[in-house]
Length: 619
Image (cartoon, rainbow, N blue to C red; front, side, top):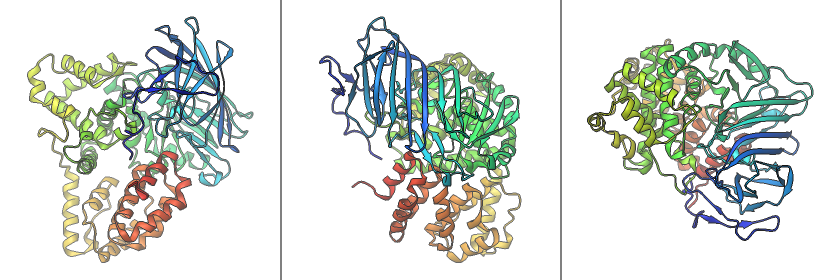
């Protein structure tokens, strides 16, 4: 990925304007927050959004009306935008001039509108562009039902600016109302109070009265139905997936009880899940009241629903207490991953949960190896100055952050740690959180001011230094010991019939496949495939590991199914390793490029950009 250092030679960005400019009007690009906005001086508080969804043009025509506070008597309010056409701007209902900076591929453009001391409302009429990074437009053929097109958004980290002009920073929270017009026969849902039935006119209204950061604004439009699970949870998805999805996610109420015990009362009222089309680029997105999730978790045996536990945990860690900057991402994702594991321990048992901890540890070690043990990005608190926030999204924030909290729990005792954790969420609700503020809270409410504990537990090393400190917890799941014994015996004997796998979960299969030699003998690959039909598995996690092993082993009998997988699944977690594996072998580089060109339009724009960087790396 580009390191984003070529863009900003100076923090001052002058305007290229569609209208007469003011000579004193400049935008100072905030390098640490990756924003053109002046949110600290002129702060947006509420959004009224009107939008019409046009599938033929693949654009949203909208008007974003912002209510703001001009704390510093500024002469301009600045917004973030990305690849959108501004039609007009109004201040307190009167049309006014506006100013737009040059476009930058990573951060978009700044939009500036002159205001006076008494002004409190500005509206911008606009249309989204073809390269809007938050939007994916799907043809009917790319959906489960095949009848209607589909649109969904993915605004984390700084992609909300391609959906609407906004102050696109996690430190500022806003409420919103929306009026969305869709083609008839379609339903629109948002991270807000949602309908449960289609409106025959295609007109929907939404309200999010609890303040959220802009990256949690979310919209999906398509052939969507709803099924309740209990009085505060349910599932939205395409009709053909509805019953299956509702059955798979039937443990949501039980998860919620565990989560509330740990984090305190659920403050968002409803918790629903939208099972998105296969091209959804990530596992899940914690949009308040409406988690967006990949259909790859619908395995039929509830073996992959820990992802829902993760997104539910975000209702406290991330949505309630939000990282103030993307440098502090570990506060969102590390706390959430720890929280997820605590939910799953209660739901599935400790033996099961320890397997999840171990697989997460393996993922973290993989990133540590790739980045180098002394790599700057192996710190929990990282420096994103002049860089895109996406650089923060690695297993360091998730898994190193989580195992750091596990270390604290093991040393301080679960009872004391749980009291601290509950107080952390309740005391800091709706407050932007920095690493430094979080550590201060920890010193006060977990260590009780005893600085010797902080030194003993190596807090500074965990947060501000690369790699892993020597007090990292050791994980050795009992169930993986048995898997490793069977794997070792199979490697020596080749007797596939001796493998006893009937009680294996997805996690045991992942351990087995990950620990086999890479490459593995084709004859042994054939034995495994004949016995367990791994090439034809419908479990996406197992399929991804099997296809990676197949590439490294030159087991080309699996390639036709692998191509089908690459054509349908859009989750970056699966796609990136497969394309990396193909590109790692000279003989398969042409195949990687061919497959990407063939299926890139099935991928979300953010995913396609990532894969493009793998198959066509810049020299």
